[in-house]
Structures are given as structure tokens and as C-alpha cells.
Image 1 (cartoon, rainbow, N blue to C red):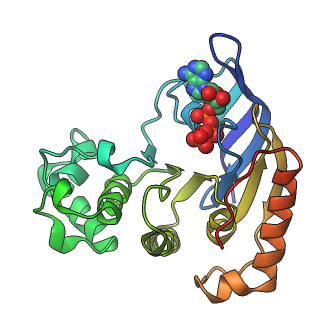
Image 2 (tube, rainbow, N blue to C red; image 1 turned 90 degrees about the horizontal axis):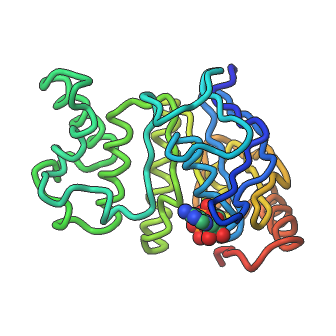
Length: 259
Ligand SMILES: Nc1ncnc2c1ncn2[C@@H]1O[C@H](COP(=O)(O)OP(=O)(O)OP(=O)(O)O)[C@@H](O)[C@H]1O
């Protein structure tokens, strides 16, 4: 597999002197689903913002397909935690999903791309509704469909399921795994939930508390096909979540481990 993304000695110090990320280096291969886990406030969002070209890091580099990221790359999409602020309330679900495709595809192509993404997330029936007519979990599905319709080379997800209830969260995690298996999109997902990082990831990158440094880069030796009950009970899962929790406990404030 070829390297899609490379972080080389990334460092970011905010104005005022707060170092959020320090000496961070890792690569992500095409097709991989990598999870980044770290304690609250450690610098995860700063890292994603640097990858997304939303901030210029004060040190080091982010390379996408070998080229330095300067500004928001065309081939990138982001799903944020706060679905209620990421969708346009005055547009239908279909129009929300089509929105980023303006100027990129013809009207008919936009329709088709949006329609198939909505089908993929199980929301074809809601295409003509408005976001506020949908539950939080459904709105987050719309946000995911919008990112998928764009067919990004790299999909960044910043705590995408942190604002929904536990049952919906499990459903959305499984949806993401299915989409990843179907579409093979390279994904970089940030979470503070250890279990989620192990359940979803092909690998788990563990970050220290602020400033974020890489504590470990752990492969996840679980079968690609995962199940919310049997996978979470398996020895491999339990061992890995324990290892991540130990790494984080050494340096961090409390982090959430689902019961
Ligand atoms: N614009 C800013 N100016 C100054 N400091 C900032 C700015 N944005 C973030 N920080 C600080 O940088 C540190 C890392 O923040 P960041 O949001 O990247 O962490 P995080 O791991 O994503 O947090 P959380 O898990 O709470 O979302 C925090 O201490 C935060 O207060």
C-alpha cells in the first residue's frame, strides 16, 4: 500500500505560547482506517486542523500524496462532532449532501452521487426532509453521506459520534465500518473513547496529554468483520484496550472507557 498522508515532526504552538502538538510523525497508507486516541484537550483537533489545512503548523510538515498541505486540499472531507451546526437547516437533506459538489459535477451527477450516498447510509427515504426533522443520529448520517458523496481521497472524522446516545453510536460505528469496507476510503478518526478506537481502527495511534506526542502506534489484530458484542468480548480486543488505557493512564487525565 502506498503512503497517502505523512506528518513529519509536526508542531503547533498557539499565539500566547501554548504548545498543542509536538514532534508528531506518522504515516497513513491509502485505504487505512487509523484512529487517534488521546485525552481531552491533548491536541487532537489541532492535529486534524493542520491535516485539513485549516491552520498552518508552526513546525514540521503535513504531506498529502507527498506534497505539502497549504490550505484546504481539494481531495479531503471532514465530519465534525457537532452535526447540528454542520448542516444547513434551510436546505433539504438531498441539497445538503449535494452542496459541496457544486462546481465539481453536473446537476445530474450531483443528484446521483448524493442519492447513492444517502442510500449507503440508509437515508434514501429522508432525502426531501430538512435536517431539523431528523434525529441527531440521522443528522450525523447526513453529514457522513455528504462527505462520502464528495468521494474524498482522505476522510477526517473529529469525534464524529460523541454527541449521540450509546445505541446510536454503536449503529454509526458499524455504518462507518461497512462504508469503509465498501468504498475503501482512507480515514483518520479522532476520538477520546479507547473502546471506539480499538473497535474501529486498523491501527490505533495513542497521543499523550498536551502537547500531543505519539506514545504508541498499535496495529489492531481483529478480523475486518466486527460485531459490537462478540468483538468487544474477544481477548484481542480486551488486551488492546487495556494496553491503550495503561499508556494513557501513565500521562493523562481520566479518559472514557465504555462499560
Ligand atoms: N485557537 C487557540 N488558541 C489557543 N489555544 C488553543 C486554541 N485552540 C486550542 N487551544 C489549546 O490547545 C490545546 C489542544 O486543543 P485541541 O482542541 O486540539 O485538543 P483536543 O484534544 O481536540 O480536545 P478535546 O478532546 O477537548 O476536543 C488545548 O489546551 C486548547 O485549550
